Image (cartoon, rainbow, N blue to C red; front, side, top):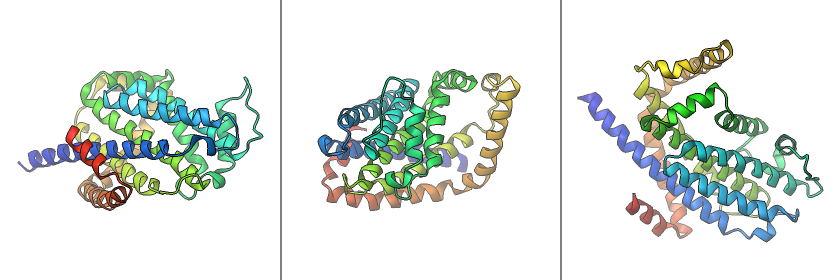
Length: 285
């Protein structure tokens, strides 16, 4: 009986947390759309890319709401590359962009100038980790093969969609932090938003682990048959096992923390005039 009650509570929490992520995305997009595109950078072509990044992020999130995870991640990776272009050219308007410019070139410029881009929310390693993660999902490897399989199963897909929603919000917050740092945006919602969204991502991982820890899936293991893939999978499985042993006992505390943190952030949203927006999203869910 206790297990049944716990499972019901977990489902309620997941639904509530999905709603919070949706609110974050709607508010983030509204805030980004309120910023003048003509004043964001001295580099003359940045305005067009800024506009495109916003469209890519918004459409990625809509695809995730429809359960189209792989399409969303492909677009999200593209948005991240556009973001690195936007950051690099905004930092240094003399950066030469030509037909031979690579995503890696632009990312390296940003990594070398993180102090000009962010306060304490992101470091240079984060940029490489985010790009590497998105690329592993997009490029055809044994990981992509496995993701294709997971995406075909609605039970797995729900957890994947939540994780990629978080990653979309992370990139939105990265953009907002950059604009804040550059004096183009002043509401400073991104730190609270990212803290709560990161906690929801952690809870999502814990719930996934708890739901499937007793289910041995030969199909998933089959994608990792060669030595390199097995080594990759085993290393990450051990990391997850080490982390989750502690974190699964923290699930209730984390969920409570999300609720209290969101209530504090909601007060800021209300001050900025988002009360009706929040109520509207709740009604439509």
